[in-house]
Amino acid sequence: MESPCILLCSIDMNTGHCYGCGRTRDEIAAWTMYSDERRKELMQELPARVAKIETRPRRVTKRRAMKDSNKSS
Image (cartoon, rainbow, N blue to C red; front, side, top):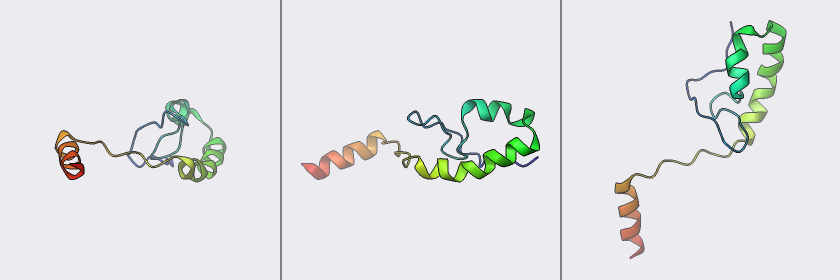
């Protein structure tokens, strides 16, 4: 069974789409129950969804925050 999953599983709270594959939580959960035709339809929609998701912000560590605050001082 074809799957768009790239093991980058995290949901964008603004769109409700996965950063990695573009599916919603409901679509991910139901993927194995969808017909081949439904999966193909979704596979065609997913690249456009992923393109609309803003780049996921990188997590700022304490070390990085301290380094950045020292630069501004």
